[in-house]
Amino acid sequence: MVKKALITGIAGQDGSYLAEFLLSQGYEVHGIVRRQSLENPSGKLKNIAGVIDRLTLHVASLESHLSLYKVISQVQPDECYHLAASSFVSYSFDDESSILAINFNGTHHLLASIKDVAPKCRFFFAGSSEMFGLVQDSPQKEVTPFNPRSIYGISKLASYHLVQNYFRQYDIFACTGILYNHESPRRDFKFVTRKITSSVAKIKLGLQEKLFLGNLDALRDWGYAPNYVQAMWLMLQNSSPNDYVIASGKNHSVRDFVECAFRYVDLDYRKFVELDPRFFRPSEKIPLKGDHSKISTELHWQTEKIFEEIVSEMVENDLKIFSNAQ
Ligand code: GDP
Image (cartoon, rainbow, N blue to C red; front, top):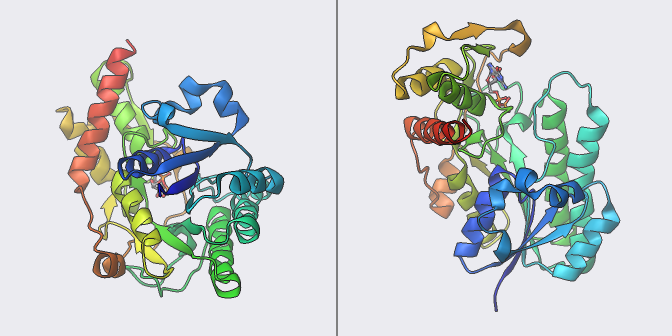
């Protein structure tokens, strides 16, 4: 029997890599998209353009229980990967209602629907290092106390508890991957890595003069997105549901990223980068860095690309995009 997978956020960075990976494993792949995405496929669905003919897309909204319930009863998935979220980390708390509605209620609507109409479906939830928030120790493991400091982190942590309780109370195979930052040529432009690589490409091509950034000393644990979606899949092939940290286990600064990206095109970043107070955020005393030893030992997951390879691949891709756009 061909396995059926349902992905929320299928047109995003992770969803699109996961869809490609599952197709390569012989799955029938279904995805949930918003109506606006179908109306503008060349824009919102560009990440899945190469495989769209092999996917079944369903229009639904994370804010509508009924729409998700209908999709799950119709598809009867064997595996559901819940990746869609309002994903940008803001510390301003300006937009609490919509982030909570999409991130927490969306997870609840999916789990409740699975319990009612597809209780054998295995459920993966994309958690986040933001759940750890202001940490006391580094690196963080699955047992590290959570202390979220952003509404995004709070919404992810609340969902994480919900996921655990659907397993305990209803015996649904539901688990959370605690994902650290993961990048790729499909990363959205609002994240610092893509902002840097797209700017480096434009500067090299003479389309931009300066790159304005916030804290260059901020540290992140950056991994490779196509590698992280394999971890999601491995978690649903496990003998029982278990939560895992998915991380590279290494910290690099924004400055390291900038230096590496400019070096790739033979430029000195110091001539082009300027600091802009608008992009500064409160800095953490102890940076987020994940310990992936549990998933490496138990599920044999390995990190795939080193930092420099991820940076080069992203710059190379942006050079192609912006030279074609000229
Ligand atoms: P996230 O905050 O970890 O989800 O990912 P981002 O890519 O948005 O930010 C990563 C780090 O880069 C954070 O510590 C930011 O403070 C730092 N940073 C420095 N300059 C910038 C900038 O211009 N834009 C963004 N987004 N982040 C910046």
